[in-house]
Image (cartoon, rainbow, N blue to C red; front, side, top):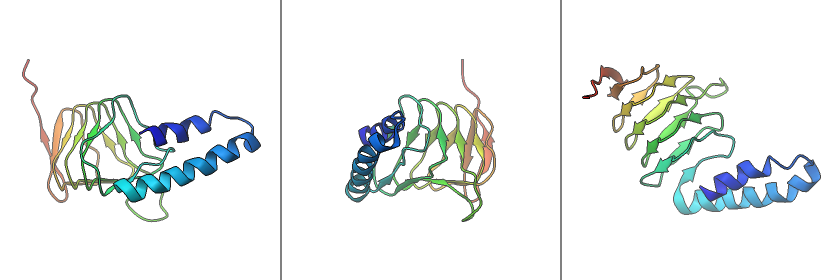
Length: 146
């Protein structure tokens, strides 16, 4: 996460020539992190507070994806484009738990308090307080006990 935050910080430097050496350092560090951990989390992606990667390896996140607060992702998760060359990545709400091997693809919106099951393939919007399971994902309403 510190490499991600460093990459975000370098954009605060307005002068291109001052930012250039920091961009080079970021790209080298990003490559090292990719090799060592198997995680592709570009600094262009928006990540909320308390974003947590529980198990690393095989995690791929598109640069225009957006995560809310308190999101948990596990190994093998892909958050990205549905088709090559067609823009649009998922927008993920707050308190979302994404299971191992899940794929969230295309310009979809995942609501708040959603659980995405392991190996689910989500290609359509998921409303808040739901569970998404299966291939393609079925949406199951989730009742929260008070």
